[in-house]
Image 1: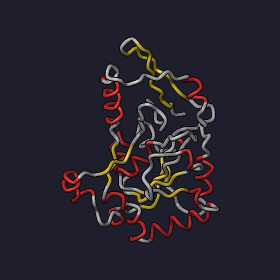
Image 2: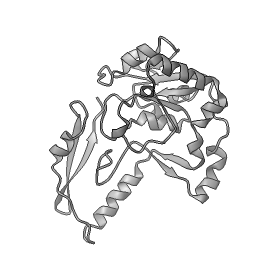
Image 3: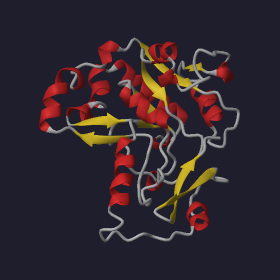
Length: 248
């Protein structure tokens, strides 16, 4: 079990799933909003509370701040309302963040198929995530046309000019939420555990157990000094492993 797309059981922080007809009708009023732009009153915000920064988040933020106003929250910015616990578990922080149109969903590291929970929670809060994805070829599972990638621009100034344009253009801003007409976000992680149960119950029905060199599997990642935990569990007399990435 891992966030990686080549895992037997894929368990990312979030995923987007297609709305079936019944669910689509039930949630249409709240989910298929015509004007999310009008509900947001502030520009761009981010939360950082980690001094370890292999993803060069602070360098990017300092450079961006030369061209646009960014409100940063978290321990490293002298604001402890956000940053001490996950913002989704902190009601005061979550309510504060929801007012902004854009959220800095920067990755602290580049890892194969890893997408930070900040990206998914920004979508759930009806915000446009601003991401720092240098290598799109190593990622999968993100929602197309839902984000603005700073590395899609030739300079930080070009990025700042574009995000300012989107902030001032109601139609352009709302276009980043077209995906909501047919999809919804799942942050529960239930799908992965259901997949695990299904595979465990099918082990006696022809499912082939795989033997994996887990050190080689982990070393094949591109994370700088990939920080990973391997948890071993005995299931039906055979060793299985849960592989999880550990945040900096």
